View 1 (spheres, rainbow over the protein chains, first blue to last red):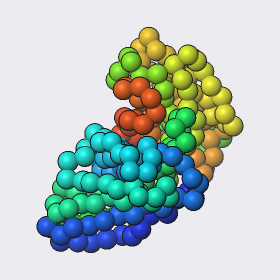
View 2 (tube, rainbow over the protein chains, first blue to last red):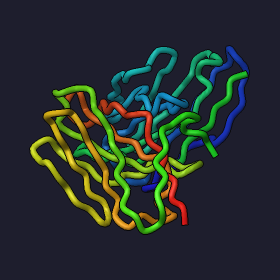
View 3 (cartoon, helix red, strand yellow):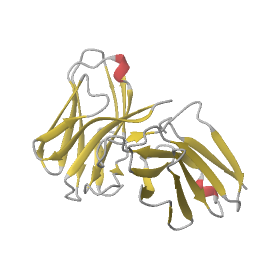
Length: 111
Length: 113
């Protein structure tokens, strides 16, 4: 998985609680991404980062925030989880020239 | 593992045959296209990409064809093997650049011995 780890790999949480997912890379790539994957929708971009403290919104950013204080870490936070945020979340990294390399994913269930 | 799609179109092929997976893209402004393979329970894995100044690009056992006239992309896999069984996604960049990719829902490839 191209030196990308995600934690936790599985999480069950209750509606209304905050949740933070972590992506860690050892490749020193500039760009990092958070996607969600749901049946019938393919991968959808939530947020991405183009450098430390530099982020931008993706297609489905509502209800999510991100932070990147170090090159190697990109955090995704659900401030108040809802059942519609039950999904599989993937982190990806890129050097910005095209291909993105994906992590193993985090399965999040909001009950 | 994680379910990537309950009702994906499925392509069934015999081991050793060639596979062709098709993708219609939506935006004529897209100038970069990419194919990914996703096995059950794993993250997507990069296969091959192509830019709009090309019609064809070859990799190891794979070829991507781009027809800009009809906005169609295809992935050809030669001598398909059981290890090729997976879900395959195409993606495009309707806003330009490489960051805001739009992914298709995917096609499941089933390889039978």
